[in-house]
Image (cartoon, rainbow, N blue to C red):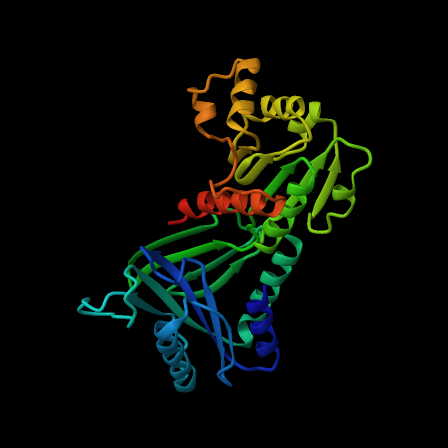
Length: 318
């Protein structure tokens, strides 16, 4: 959001902006697909395309294009390997990234305003970049957050769903749920929390969740959306309620489904419900939840869960 506010401010002052977008990344590239940076005529910067000497060089290129009045789009491939014959970025981390540079002026102000409105209202919209230029489709939808097709410098297209945000549903509003809400909110997730208890301080004091719901766990499946951007963790107050919620959700389509508890407890739940530990549905369940880092405190447990969720999220984006 901040980069678009930066662009809007400059366009309102009738200053041109050079927008840089990483439209493709591979390997250990520091600039991941979707990273953005903006350069003003005054050489003020917002955002990042990866940092380091690579970013310095691309900023110099973008500034020069602004000074020379070159609008772009210009595609620049950067290979992070000093043995590469061409397009060396000066970095040695391996991998590569492709950046598009395109100048924006007052004629793009309406599209930028629409992007900001889309982000504020969480409405679907698509940022589209191509050799033809910069475009925003306010009512566009697509199956993935980013779709890029790159054939050559004259034939490529980048489309990004600007309102896309990952969605975490926490079933159980105890101490770990509170800690996890804070971490995942800071990581940019939409956070919703659910509990069936009437009086619960960790529910009332949770200022990080976007939405809080008191529900009957027998109806939990009616409240949680399905989809590739939805992550669900089960951490209710007791063994029985964990079991009840798992039975309701295990057949649903989520990006991630995790159950907190010991191996003994989880094996007991499988036995009581008749769920086979070798079934396909269980192969997609993360139980015990979280990465094994010998967590002890609620915050440490929340860190382990957050790390596992980020691992799953990013593994699909590589």
